[in-house]
Image (cartoon, rainbow, N blue to C red; front, side, top):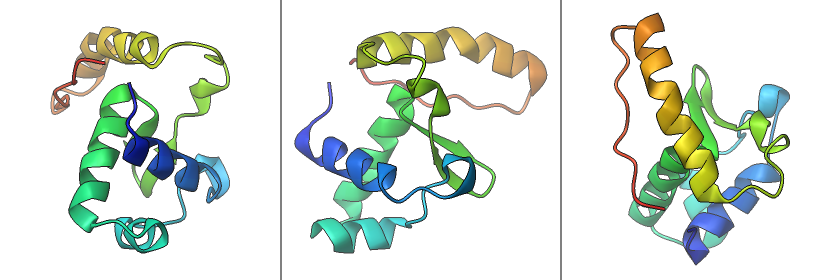
Length: 104
């Protein structure tokens, strides 16, 4: 599940979105806004990426727009869907490197 820090980071990102759900804050801004260390923010963002709540795309971090379709789904269900997508991503891009997913 999400810890307190991950939830705070996710909510701050969600209220600071630009076009195409792009997060308009960098990690330093998030750390300053929440009064947390940059290393703690980095760990939280890695966890949110692994869970599929945030996506790393060209131009920065994006809130996963499919979350609306998954409303009410458990985080573990979303993470499992992401794991299922990895073979497809590898087919499209041989350079694709998947993150290690924490148990959720």
